[in-house]
Each structure stands twice: as C-alpha cells, then as structure tokens.
Image 1 (cartoon, helix red, strand yellow):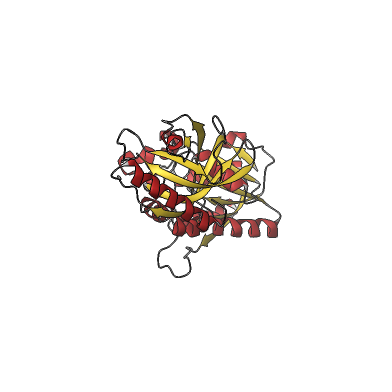
Image 2: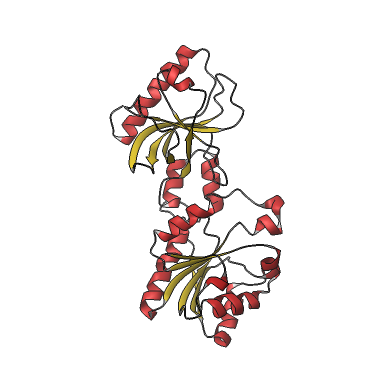
Length: 316
C-alpha cells in the first residue's frame, strides 16, 4: 500500500480512484465493511482503492477538550489499513488550515484534484470541511458537477448487539476491560506495542518474570487487571502465550504510572530486553487488587497463569 502524507505527493496521473473517507481509528468492523465495499467498487470500475484519513482526531484541533484518546496510533492504523489490500492511503495533516477548508474546496482540491475520484464512500454520520458543513447529501449534490458518485455505507451491528460498531463503543469496552467484545468489534485482538525495558524485577523475584513495556503513547490500554493474551516479538517473529498485567501493582504501592507487563507462559530464562513487541489481549481474568502479603499474591499469580494457559490452550 502506498502512503501519501500530502495531496502534493499524489502523482498527477494517479487514478481514477474510489475513495473512502474517515478517521478509521482502530480500523474496526465498521471500517472494514466500508473498505470491503470500496474494494468491490474499485475492482468493478478498474479504479484505485484509496482511503483518506487524518494524522489526528480532528477534535484535537477543533475541540481539544472533547477529544478522546486514540484507539491506535497513526502508524498502527496505516499498518491495519495496509493489511486490507488498499492501493493507497492519503494521510491528511489536520491543522488549522485544513479545519478552515470549505467542504467544496475539500472535494475539489483533494478528492477531485489530487485523487481523481470516481466514487466516494462514507458513513451516514460523516462530516467534513469547515465547521462540519460537508455531509453525504452535499457530496451527492457536488457529484454531478465534479464527475463522481456517492455511496453511503450502512452501520455495522454485531450479532446479538444493539450498539453500532464505533470507536467510541470500543473505548467503552476497553475501559471496562471487556476485551472479548472489543475483539468482536475490532475484528482482531486489542493490542498495544512497545519496547521491553527494565522494570523493578519484582516478578522475577516472585518466580514470574515479566517483560515490561515502555510507556505506551497514543494507544488505548485496557482497564487495569490481569489478562490472558499473546506477546508478539517482532524481532524474532515468535508469538508467546502470556499472562498480562495492566496497572500500578497496588500490593506494593511503589509504581507511579500504569504499566503493561507480560509473563510468558512456560518460559523463565527468556531475554526480551530491547525487543520491539506487541501485546494482544484475549480475555480478562480479574481486576487489579491489593493483596495482604506476598504469599497470597504469589498464590493468585500461579492461579492466573493456570487460567491463562487454559484459555489460550497451551501449557503453563
């Protein structure tokens, strides 16, 4: 997948293209439905399949007091979009200049001028342009003038759920620690990525050595607690079954910031320091609690490891 960081980077002979526009935060099942339809339309017309997105949530510029935390980083978003078979993604820098661009100029300069769009796909609630004046209806009005058609893609609902799949709902699920339902909504395990750094080595002292991730920036970490999941080592390509802890370790009360640390099941001498890893959350085992004494903590940690191994269907 080609990544353009500005409309100026798009070659003059690029296109025609079928374009889907959105924040695509999390690249969840709703987004994937849009992309699937995008690729169908592009294949049918012999066009390029292109996503147009932003380098930050527009609210970070327009209403920073109301801007939610991102579900994934921009780099992770591009990685996920690339896995879906798109020809290109245009990442627009959302700054004061773009915020002031009128809806029609957005269409004329970016969609038509740079991407030579033939079809635009959006969700029913999509807004764009200065003060959100651009709507699907406006796109339909502008289509004949600029030579493109418009498709509005229906919301996606999971079987048995009355909530439409959205980034907001996924944040709610992660805040509640419900990584199982979040997995259904995302179409993949929720994950965070970082470099393994040295911690207090308390897990090793207790017989459960952990890989501590560096501070996660601009990615949504699930609620404090203990989880079953996977540690993916990008340096070796190995997926390690793990029991994962998120929080500040209240039993000892000397960790000042939330940490993500993973105990790899069945391994005690594994050296992961400095490795680039992703931690995937499969199921929540329990919340984070303070134990009365180290013995009770170690007993619970052993039970956590056994339960994680059962869920992941591996040996502890």
